[in-house]
Each structure stands twice: as C-alpha cells, then as structure tokens.
Amino acid sequence: MNSIVQSAQRIVVKVGSSLVTNEGRGLDHTALTRWAAEIAELTRLGKAVALVSSGAVAEGVARLGWKEKPKAVHEKQAAAAVGQMGLCQAYETAFRQHGLKTAQVLLTHEDMSDRTRYLNARSTLLTLLSLGVIPIINENDTVVTAEIRFGDNDTLGALVTNLIEGDVLVILTDQQGLYTADPRRDPAATLIQQAVAGTPELEAMAGGAGSSVGTGGMYTKVIAAKRAARSGAATVIACGREPQVLTRLAAGEAIGTELVAQTTPLAAKKQWIADHLQLRGRVTVDDGARRAMVERGSSLLPIGVVAVEGEFHRGEVVSCMDVEGREIARGLVNYGAIEARRIVRLPTGQIEAVLGYVDEAELIHRDNLVLV
Ligand SMILES: Nc1ncnc2c1ncn2[C@@H]1O[C@H](COP(=O)(O)OP(=O)(O)O)[C@@H](O)[C@H]1O
Ligand SMILES: N[C@@H](CCC(=O)OP(=O)(O)O)C(=O)O
Image (cartoon, rainbow, N blue to C red; front, side, top):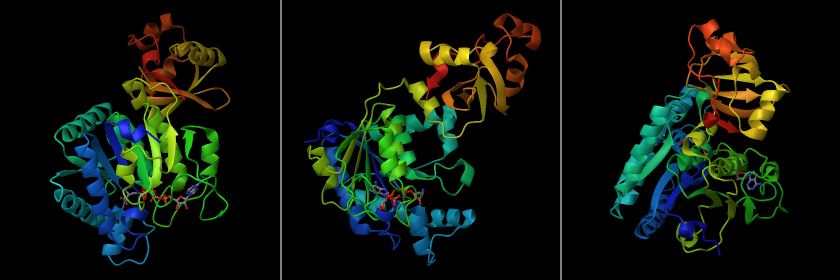
C-alpha cells in the first residue's frame, strides 16, 4: 500500500518526451487519451491535477519530417513551436471527452526567478485549478536560450509542485521507476520501491543520460524529487505505459518508486529562493560569518564578507560561498553588487559614511537566507 497519491489533494503529473511521442515517432494519441481519462477520474475523486508535458521538440521534429533532434538551438526552438501546437490540440481533444477544459501554460526560468512573475504564475495556476481546468504546462522553449533553460521538464515539474504547493509530483517515464542502475545498461539492476528524497546514493544510481528523445534521464528526476521535498511534497516515479497507473496510485497501490520528503517544508519565500536555478552573483564569507549562518541561523553582515562576484541588484538572489569555494547558502541581497563591494569588511556603523545611506544593516537578512 502506498497512500501518498491516495491522500493527495493537489497533484502534479509530469510526462516525458519519450512517452508522449512514442520515442520520437509522433504523438502517442492512445497514451494521451489514457492519461486524460485517468486524470479525469482523479478530478472526480476531488483532486486538483496539473499536467507538465514534454514532447514539443520531439513532436515538432516528427511533424517537420526531420530524421533526428537538431543540434542548433534555433532549430530546436522552431521544432518546439510546431510541436507545442500538436500537444495542445491533442490534450484539449482528449480532456474534452471527459468534459474537462485545458489551459496552455508556458513558463520560463525568468518567470520563476522574478518574484512578481512567480506570484502571478502561482495565482493563475491556482485559479485554473479552482475552476476545474487542467493546466497543460511546458517550458516556453521558443524564447529561452540554452543558458537560461530549465532544460528538462523534471525540474519544471518540481518547481511547479513547489509553486502550487502540490502534495505529490508523479513523474511518468518509460521505466518502472528508479533502479539501482540504468536498466538499459545493467540487466541486474533492481527497482527501488521507496527511499528518502535527497539521499546522495540515489543520485549515484541515476547516472546515465536517458533515452534518445528525453533530456535528463533518471538523474534529473532524482534531483526533482529533492527539490519537491523542500515544500514537503513526495515524488513518485512510475511507468506511464502501466495500465491505469494514475488511478491505481490514487487507490493506494504501490507502483514504481516513491521518494518521500523528510525535510521540514521551507517557508514559501525561502522555497522560492532555494528554487533559483541561475544566480546573478556570489559572495564569499569568512569563517566567523559561515558559522554564524550555519550554526546559529544568523543574518549575513557586510563585515563577514570577503569577496563579491557578479553583477546583481538589490532584491536579487545570490550564492554565499565559504572560503573553500563551497556554496553554503543563498539569499536575497539588500544591496546591489556595486554597493556591496564598497561595504564588505565594514562594521555596520560605517555603512552610512561610505554609501551616504543605510538600507539595512544586513547584506542578507536571515528571513531571506536559505542554507543549501
Ligand atoms: N537508475 C536508473 N533507473 C531507471 N532508469 C534510468 C536509471 N539511470 C538512467 N536511466 C535512464 O533514464 C531513462 C528515462 O529518462 P528520460 O529518457 O529522460 O525520460 P523522460 O523523457 O521520461 O524524462 C530511462 O529510459 C533509463 O534508460
Ligand atoms: N520542453 C521540452 C521538454 C524537454 C525534455 O526533453 O524533457 P523530458 O523528456 O521530460 O526529459 C519539450 O517539450 O520538448
């Protein structure tokens, strides 16, 4: 028995490219129809479900008649634009058969790192769910560049789970779950039924790159589970080809791998800080400041900072590194990089003399600081 999906009220289901597009051969309408029927059943049980679906690039490649996924970014983006049309049409048709409306939601990393856009995305998604609409979510592949991509939809699925405070992230893929090693390479690999999300051994098991059409392999799924656990959500990794996989999970059946969250959920704002994928800068802190932050949960004062790198503005998220170069925390800065460089190593009382004003005594206040 596995009661996680059974008791969940808000569920994020993520389906990967290889499943959605029949390993790149074109949209698997039968599978989409099946998942839509199962999700419709979950909504009848009173659960709210958001669907993160990959497959735009792979479907675009198939529609354009290309033999393989292109290497050039602009070609992938063009393929995504073509394929996303197919995804939307197919989901709209499949859910309509159950009297459910769908909504297309395309997100970028910037939508998640800008606090206002993040909160907008959150209220739109929660409104859609409260209206009984199924959001069909994907990365806005057409406008993002390689450096600022989520890249794989496992990460996007985890961030959406945190965004809407989902109870569980269900990742459907082409394997039965997480194995002790890649089952494509190691026939002796065995299925892990349950583990604690964020355990380092899981990352080692999930080596390899994955299928030719998918992006992250199992590694990004294991990391996604770790991210989702920050908001207290569990992750289930299961096979999307398994008949009635979602409804059976909702009935309490143990299928696939369950990665449970054992960490105390972070407060919403801290979770947003921790979920930043790209940071604009970093500050190196001395050992006294490191201990104060790590052992006592203190704020970071300018006097404890030894170096400032990158260009960031007040209100942006930066990494805090120890003198050995390890990231120990991240947080929202009260001063931009230019000001921060001028006040490092200074006691609080001297900030005003140097800058002509004092915004806050702390470079990063403890309420805006997350240990990593
Ligand atoms: N430990 C593991 N357990 C299961 N699958 C693994 C593992 N390590 C690597 N993989 C590979 O990950 C693949 C699934 O990832 P991917 O192709 O990115 O799927 P998706 O498109 O569903 O995100 C599997 O087909 C498998 O070959
Ligand atoms: N946004 C991309 C998905 C990226 C991707 O391949 O993700 P996944 O198959 O989930 O590892 C698309 O729709 O093609």
